[in-house]
Amino acid sequence: MKIKQFLKNNTIILIAVLCVLSFSIGYFGSMFAEKLEENQTKISAASDNEELIQPTTSIVLIRQYTKTDSVNIKQVEPTSEMIGKDIDYIISAYEGWEIGSFSKEKISLYKTIDSYPPGTFLVTSIISQEDGQEVLAVYEYDIDGVLSLKESFDTPVELLPESEIVKVREGIIVNNEDELSSLLENYAE
Image 1: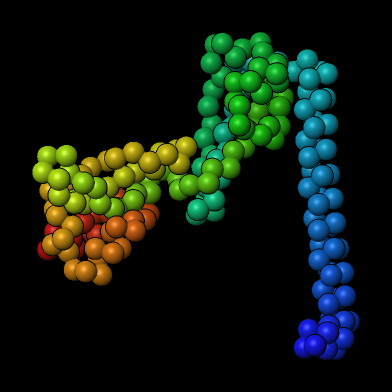
Image 2 (image 1 turned 90 degrees about the vertical axis):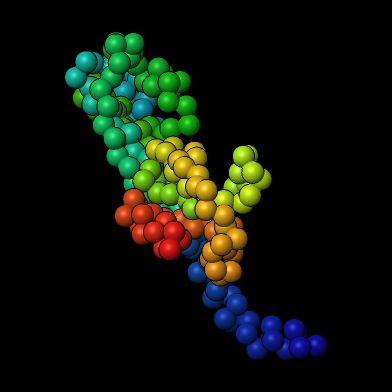
């Protein structure tokens, strides 16, 4: 009964919200489709024009990290194996990347990585293989957002204040070397 009354009293508002949602989905969906079609047209044109990779071709790799909404841009030179190859070679060599542009002057490739950028650290705990104690450990994210163990310490986690133990076990993200040093100094005291 209350739901019927709510719907009766708020029908106009609900219709307005649905209209706005429908318009937004249609508008942004069409913008995305147009951009995709534009990129495909450029790629097809490059393929039709027999654009080939030259020794002077600039290759720009753009990685966007979703956890920080940051971007890493790296410019590389083509390898000798790439010279004289076309867009099909780039598609197969850079699987998982999106092609933004392709010409003999410049190739831009995009990749979204659901992780943190290089230079970001994770402070957490691990079980020491030597004595089975839970100790502090620092992991580092690489350019592809993959974690690798940077260093583990002899500091038992149980010596930290209880609130810090919880944080360490959940994992603390640290944005740079200075923050990492400061945090580790605090734990050493």
